[in-house]
Image 1: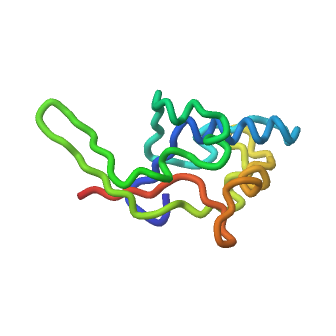
Image 2: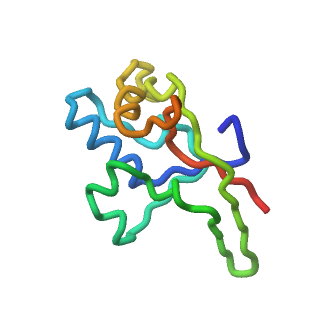
Length: 124
């Protein structure tokens, strides 16, 4: 991530994006490596299982703080903003071939002229 300490992306967000790519017939599915996140999370929240909710939002869009606990410590990470994506997400990290990832994201993740995917966090 270039704009903050940590870029977090949910597996739910990747799954939703892959559904859009498949439904439009735009080719190869993506993996988290396309987006260079520092942290990828998965969650079993009931709200995330609602298909209509998944198409319009990603759970990390609504998180303001996350805590990572160890036996002796807790690390708090605070959300500082969404990540605007560029053409680099179209490049397959394995083959180097160009895909349609940004085009698929633009279908449902455009906000004020920017295509947003993932959330930046910083430690406190």
